[in-house]
Amino acid sequence: MASVNLSKINKVFGSTHIIKDLDLEVGDGEFVVFVGPSGCGKSTLLRLIAGLESITDGDMRFADDLVNDLPPRERGVGMVFQSYALYPHMTVYENMAFGLKLAKTDQQSIEQRVMETARILQLEELLQRKPKELSGGQRQRVAMGRAMAREPRILLFDEPLSNLDASLRVQMRNEIARLHHRLGSTMIYVTHDQVEAMTLADKIVVLRDGRIEQVGSPQTLYQQPATKFVAGFIGSPTMNFMPAELVGDDGDGYRVKTPGLGELTLPQDASTQTKGAALTLGVRPEHLSLAEAQGDNRFEIVNVEYLGNEVYVYLEPKVGDTLLIHRSEAPSQWQVGQQVALVPQLEHVHLFDAGERALGLAKATKAA
Image (tube, rainbow, N blue to C red; front, side):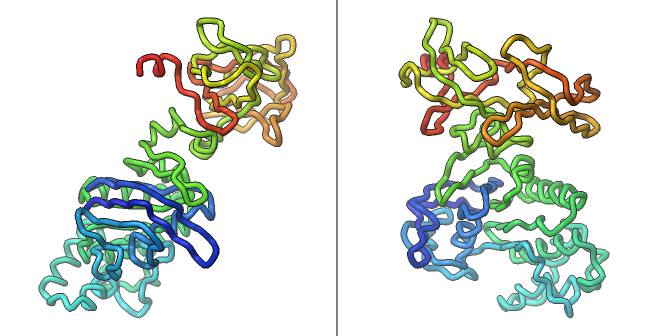
């Protein structure tokens, strides 16, 4: 096991700057997930850590060891790819032992490591099968076992579940989480699926355009997003956003005016903003209640999605190109065509300035 320290990491391909002055610390034994939209640099960053790509500028250390110029085989990392990349003519045992043979490990050690890894991953009954005789989940476990058998200091995962169907993804998420708890290894995992990030990570790194947007626990990112981007990316369905204008401070909080909702007094500290400033109000679907339509607070239900244990209610008028969403437990009394009022739970409302940075709570600001 080892910690990972990235300092001012840059990666340039030709004239394209992919990773930009990135600083990050991954603690010994942490499970860290890189998440972000396509093209944000998450897979490139993982390949830099693995040594599959060279760093243009900056320092990378595993524990106290500078690894900038070390080839992949000398870094002590194991990598599980999106593709299983198993040798079809080899058995499960031979696939898992292959890397150890290349490293000229003695036969007794190979036998011991492969059998121990097979026990951990529950592959003991499959060791003499070939990949074509395995299910998708079993193949992915073999790919993980091949990386683990080398006893790497750091395990890297590059979207390992994206080729699996929905039920297998859930099963494999549980397998990987149990594996981390059992081994205590340092693991870095790349995904575009924020559900995987929320369910697996000790710490999530949200990337955008080659830079870190926010780092924190799943709870922190969901409850206290630092930017509008993080607020919209983390959580499903996505957060509702509405334009707002700062009206003033009435002593109990800052008043904002939002189309359709009228004036709201919020606990956020808007002291850095001037009266009339254009802001964005954000509220998650579960924190947006519905009531009977009142005056200008009037929205129409255009769709109701029943998902078994919960219901999503979609409302017009749209804000920009997006329908507003209310989420509640099933069953639901709401029907398409009904006119309703929106009632945000003010203690859960988020407020973002024109630069899309979150405005913190006033009480937190005063306490600081």
